[in-house]
Length: 130
Image (cartoon, rainbow, N blue to C red; front, side, top):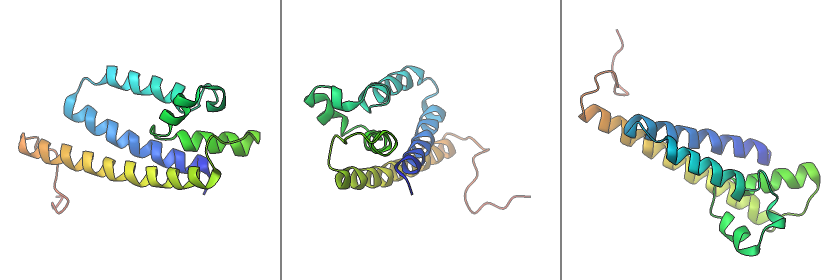
């Protein structure tokens, strides 16, 4: 699977997490705008990380999908990578697994909280549908 494919999978899992936050806290648009802006500038979507100062490149390693963007740019444009290729692939897979676990945890949290608050339309996994 390509770096692009793994990045899309991670983004979809982040979408599940953000959807769960939206269901729970309703008004989270300001948080989403901040996260969107941080992703665009600190993952290399707009400006390649190679031209940014080293402290920004090092900090970007902690933002999900930085490695997917850098690997995609490397394979499409034949550019150099910020970190060694094996490290970027490993980090991308680890981030995918961590984001997946977070999305499952966030969804389960919202589901249990919704049941406790009396939202009757949230069904259990074993409920019989008539």
